[in-house]
Length: 202
View 1 (cartoon, one colour):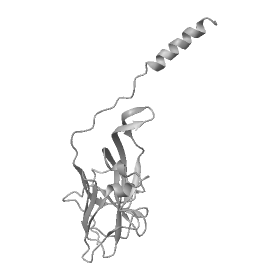
View 2: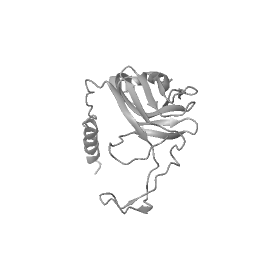
View 3: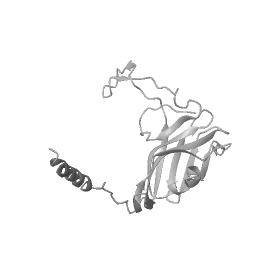
View 4: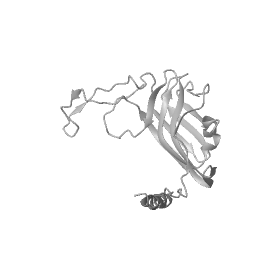
């Protein structure tokens, strides 16, 4: 049995050395920005607490709209969020109340090329997901007397001290608008379908 040990060890070594390196796909050649309309954030429904009678082409169960975990204080007519290729985060919206203050929350995953690491140089490196709020405290997007909010801030500044995460292949995994008065989510990316019966908020 002892004679077989070196042979088995050699086989095991070959298997380790022959293991393929993780595949790395190329970045897209162009992705000039991220833009989304923001709809009202609602609490999730799980499990359903009521039965739906009509119309019939809907799930049989649901929940009464609730805004306990989400914001129930701010109004909104519309809001648009943009993240540009220049590294700017821009917010435009109306229907808010004068002196309301807002921040944008993003969850991003960044992959950078040309990074020197402990295992080699000129590597493609994906960094851990980051959740950031922009602009950084104590700054906010402030609502004007006419209910308008319009402003921009720098993505790199929000990522400080890791400002260079503002370049590369930036995945936006989640985006939301935050009421700074209570820290709750008030709006998220979505669509308000034309022709649907929908409650209007002040």
